[in-house]
Every structure is written in structure tokens, then in C-alpha cells.
Image 1 (cartoon, helix red, strand yellow):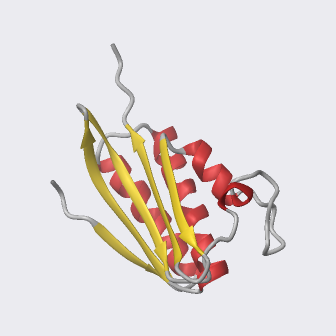
Image 2 (cartoon, one colour):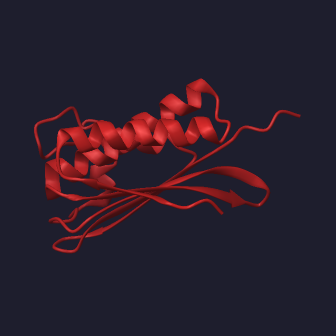
Image 3 (tube, helix red, strand yellow):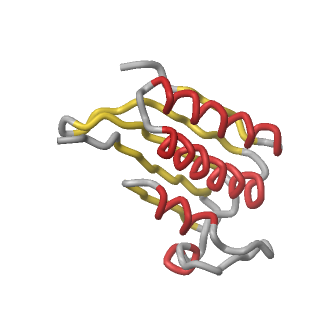
Length: 136
């Protein structure tokens, strides 16, 4: 398996860098241009949440295989304040930062797999995956 990319998130420049690296890795692994954009957008959304709520964290991106499918797994992790109500945070329009409240729900819709683990005072980990489409 190829090595995992580990990208520190502590500024807007880091968000752009993570987005670009995600797009590059998706292209290198044969994702369509549309899926490259989807992956980059989802990375941007979760990285922005790291910056908004925790001020710093990390995005990891790695190729993966699951039951014969090839894809990319993205893990966004921080040690910030955590999320009190995960169900509410995943609803369109909910925001505690004054934004549109589309970040987490949008990332969840864009990716094929999405898992969020968080607890108040414990930080947040978002794990998401996009699988290459098979044409049969």
C-alpha cells in the first residue's frame, strides 16, 4: 500500500494545500475529474472545520482497498472542543460559527463512506472514503 499523506492544518493555506494534495492523489489513482473535485471539496470542508473549531489538526489521505474496490480514505482529526450533538451537527444549516452549516453534511453527501466520532473536550475525528466507480 502506498504511503499515507499527513497534512497539518493550522491556516487557510494549509486547507488549500490539503485540497490540492487530495486532488493530486485522486488523479494519480485514476479517479474521474468529477470525483477528484468531490474528494478535494470534502477535504476542504473537514479541514475548514478543523481550523474554525480547533485551530489546528491533521488531515491524512491514503489509498485503500475494500472488498475489491479501490479508493481513497481521508481522516481529519483534531483535539479541539468536540461536538456536543453529532446528529445536530450533521443537519444542513446548523452552525455554531455563523457559517451556512453545510460543511459536515456536505462532506457526508459527497463521499461514499462517512463516520464522525467526537465528544465534548475530546476532539473530533472524521473518517470518510470515496470508492472508484466500476464500469461493467
